[in-house]
Length: 482
Image (cartoon, rainbow, N blue to C red; front, side, top):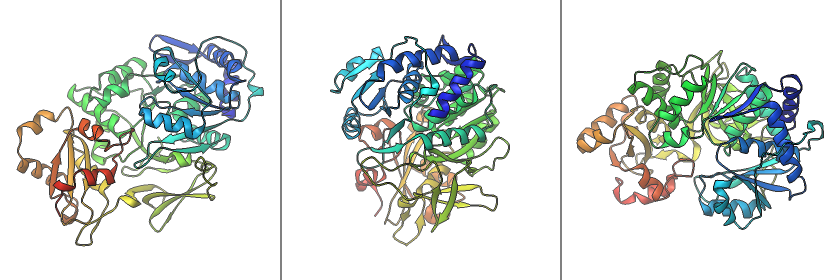
């Protein structure tokens, strides 16, 4: 993050009292942010090399990140939404020697068996010219097995942040609304690094994501109305809840918004269209941790619906046997304890490029379902069609090797009453109509109604909400059509 720290130093020199961060009623200027990072930096300089950050989205998270990066430490974000078992694995695997946290989480951290300390707000000068090269290890909650550590360094972080800032034409006039956790690489790059490079203030809406996960869009709507952001990054789930909330209240998103990047999962075209009608300027993107987050995205000056845009600056995307292959300076240094990868990264995602370089995602290579009749179906395609209905919060299509596919459906809070009153025939009719554009062999012939909590309780979803497809097929094996 050397480039980010240098940019921070420039802001302190030329506009020290400009707003850098806002969280609830707290505001930090660039001068204050730099001072607090300097104070914490002095404290952590003599600590062990690998240090974790365990905190929800807050000003302290950013201060810790800057302080550790300035000291040349290896930063390991510890997501507060990971299970104790996953956190224990990360701490052991990465050899985390110290953890920075905040007072409400001290009891939790004290049980982790690692020395820890608070992210205090003591100011001291920060010499950005003395910053040391740093790195980070990002753990992704994969669909199978334990999380794997992705090794990233100065090259990947700096090039990714600069390319994203360029792609969205970020300026000091922007106001970034941070909703996703900073412990996710996507938000660390888009919500910390890119705004600091551009000199744009970050507004932290720390309650919005958790409330949206429960089907309540009120905190997100309130944050957008209060802060009047110009840019934000969301997942499709958050976008859906926000769109439903605006539609139900006959409201529109603030006119200040010029770009809402959406990634992390496929964006159903019908959802994107509904969001645009509510004034949410959706711009689909695509990325993965192994390539330092964003690989491609639709730009404010050029968007093609249904695609994830064109590659960001410096990144080359090719299609080999239908698989998306990424090359460039943002490709990771390898998995922790693994070999350094080749110059290009085979993503495992299926895709295609049009004549103008716009990328379309067709699903995961290893997710393709083959029916007993030998027909290939990408489940993500069918799931996207079904998720266009606001009454459905989650859909997982399964049935590999079977004569008929099965849709596992979880009602949304807005659709719970409707599902409670109808019969199986009406559900089948709904699914058939939603999948009208798909060939008959790709339409689910059976369905299972379940709840989001049940899926999580049975560990059928990853910690960031992605389906564990193999586990799901095994769990519902008795209910699937042979």
